[in-house]
Image (cartoon, rainbow, N blue to C red; front, top):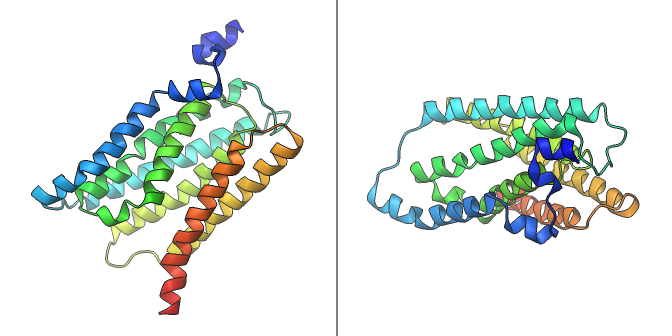
Length: 238
């Protein structure tokens, strides 16, 4: 207990799951994030779009490299666990959880850049839901549940973001001729949520996982599948 307290006092703090969620520092951040999006209409009304090509190139490549580093941190920790279904504090994974929480805060800049460039159309419900939920979940897992059982989900997500931000970086490098593998990128994201659902369901049935991970996975799979259908299937039909 003293060891946990010395690492992070929150790990030994009592309270229900809902109390912990409401006490997260990311909750007011998420509220400010949503308020920023709501009031961004006024920014577009009174300003001109900014050209941020060089900034976006550096930002996206930095996020890709950071995501690779986080992926390796999770894989290193998971390689020495006794089970990927282990539900207790594991010190070797704690830094990975911290870095994951940190980058989810940094990734809110995705939306800031969209607003500055007057790309309001890109700020969809999927975009906002994904960023807000991952911000809160990364905060929750870092402060209360840095377990091996959750690490595979975050490792896979980090790996996907390595490729995702590399794609964005390539797009910023050459906005006129974007990489041709956007469709494959979306397919990889859908595959991620399918594998997440399989792992979450297996954990729920045989290792006492909570059902929330299944419900969240279903929402993400549904939203990304709908995006894929609208973005690619409709184009093929026309």
